[in-house]
Length: 422
Image (cartoon, rainbow, N blue to C red; front, top):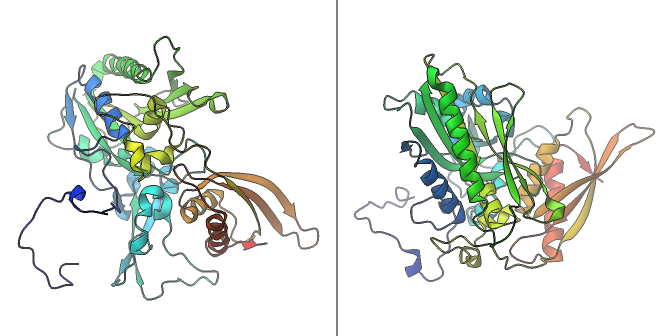
């Protein structure tokens, strides 16, 4: 921007948003930054501090969440589902307009915090198969938003300063396509612990890490319990079919009897990819900090963690952990049904259907329910019907706003999913 304006850099001053009346952040605020008092930062620091009492720590700076296409092979080496769940962004060449990498107008960028999945809407082929690029020209290059911090493992363990026996720690945001469910989020903060050790000490190191991690997580989940209350959440490490890895389950009743369920807050990987040194064993622990914060404070809606509303952060006093008190009671909800004919040749991707709904509604769709499937007796064409429920977590939606989003959703699925709304 400076170069296009003919400016030169002559001095740098610290920026204080408090000194600018009416200033509003329109980008990622850095929940894990040193100056942050966000509950995600608080829970991460407590977790790291407790593990630091047992293991030497080495905190690493997390790199950009953007992953070039040439590096996507590392995704499938960890989990074959990672690549299909990753958000892809088409790079633009020769673009001098106000379109961003997300292909959204610059004035819409503030929606990133309310709707992280907006990043999934690059221009896609139209119904006639031609690219709808308008004045932009698409290059062949693509980048991906990392679906896990595990993509950084090769660089960490192959670094010359890697220290066996120390916990190497990475923390940062990750992004995954997912169905619309109460405790499933398209963007969240993850902490990755990497522990390398001599293969002869495998059992001792692994058991020590598992025991201390379980104790720490159990302790965190009791921080907001009132005196005399019973523990409403329990941690369990569930052994996986490969006989080497675990998932970290939490059986929680914090959100009422209707929401009592087992939540997966992380994983423990002890299986050895081909990139790892033969004389060492490694353990990788991934934790969903957003979900952990929700469980600790009793925050029932993950979208609240991304809100701009200042009343949210006022609930969290540095150095104290108290139960979260919601300030938005009974926000109105609206229900809309949608039916459409499928294109037999194109097929139907339900995950993409949910992803488009997230992006168009700016994460105000809280539920998508499959209602029915109909096959025309003469043409044998198939039609599906779904029910969408709209509701925000920190403000009231109007009927007009919802009707507008539903109308836009009908147009988007017709264009991107190659279906014909009825």
